[in-house]
Image (cartoon, chains in turn yellow, cyan):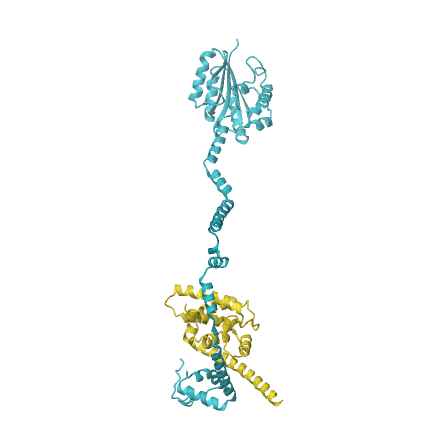
Length: 160
Length: 341
C-alpha cells in the first residue's frame, strides 16, 4: 500500500468518525484488512479494495461510535486546510444517513471513481450517483445555512 | 381468444412522448440535477432538466445546494495526513500483536540473560501446563479397562463356578465325619443337618460358597430304594429345573470292595463322569471305604443307578445346594463301603 492510499484510509475514518483515537484504530484495522485482501487478490484495483475494506471496518465499529460527538484535536495528525469551517461537516456527519455520509467521503473527499465505489460495494453506479446527489444537496444546504448565519452576523456587526 | 392490441386502431392507441417533447416531472428533474451538473445526461435529457430548472424555484435552490456541497467537499478533500501518522499506521497495521508487544516492551534491548531466562520460563510453563491439563488418569484407566485383564477375570469366575463345586477340602466336607463315626448309617435326615453345620464351620476358608451355604435350608433326605428311585428322580428333575441347584448323595454297601471299587471308577469314567472336588475319583478313604465326588451327564444318571443296583441297594438322596450346575450335568457324591456281614 502506498502512502497516498494509507492517507486515503486515514481520511475516510477521520471524516466518518470525527474522533482521532478511534479513527487511528479503525484505520489500522482497515489497512491490515486491505493488505490481507490484496494478498488474496493481487490483481484487484486498490481503490476497490479500499472501498470494501473501509466499509467492512465501518460496519464493525459504527455501533461503538456515537455520531455527532466530535473528538478531534489539532495535534492528532490530520491537517485541516486553513480557514475551512468544519461546522457544516459536523452537522452533516450528525444528521445524514450512513449511505449519504460514506458516499460523499469516498467520492468527493477520497476522490474514488463512482465505478470503483460501486464495484467495492456491489452496487450499480446509478445508485452511487443517486446517493451522491442527495448527500451533496444536503451538505450544500448546510453550508448555505451557515453562510446565511455568517452573513447575518456580518450585517449585524456592520450595523452596530 | 384474446386479441393482440393493434397500434393503428384509434381506440387502442398508446401515446408515446415524441422526440424533443418529453416533459420531466419535478421528482425526476430534482434527482437528475447532480447528473445534469456533471454532464452525465444526453442532450435530450439535458434540455428537459434545463427547462425544468427554468420554471422550478426548488430545482434552482437544489442545484445551488449541490454546487455548494461540491465546493465544500472539494475543500475538505484538501485535508492531508501528517507523515508521522502515516508511518504510525503503516507500522501498526503491518505488525502482529506479538511484534507490537515486543516493540512496546523494548525486548530487543533487554540483557541476553534475562531474555534467555524468560524464554526458558515460558517453555517450562508450557510443559507444566500441558502435563497438568492432560487427563492422564483417564487415559490410564481407559487402557486398564480396555485391556485383556477384564476378560481373564470373567474366565476366572466361570472356572470357579464350574470346576469347584465344593470348597477346598471335599473329603472333609462331604464325608461328614471320620470313618466309623457319625450317624450317617442310621439316619440320613439328621445327617443333612450335620453336613450343613460342617460346611458352615468350614465356610470362612471358602468365600465363594460361604453365604449360600449358610442360607441353605436343611431338608430331610428320605432313604430310598433303587426301585423307587426312578419316580423320585423324575420328580426331582422337574423341581431341579425350578430351584437353584442340587447335590446328589449316594451310599452303597458292597462286598469285595477292593475289586468292585476300581470297576465303579471305570464305569463312571465310561459314562462321562469327571472328577469334582479336591481328591481323585475313587479315592480310598480307608481300607473299607471308597469316595467318589464327580459330575456326570444327567442322561447317564439312570444308567449309573442301574449299574450300582447290580452290586447292592444304593441309597440316593438329593438336597438343595447353592451351586447351580450347567444344564444336563449333575453333581454326585458317592460313598462305597464294605458290606458288614
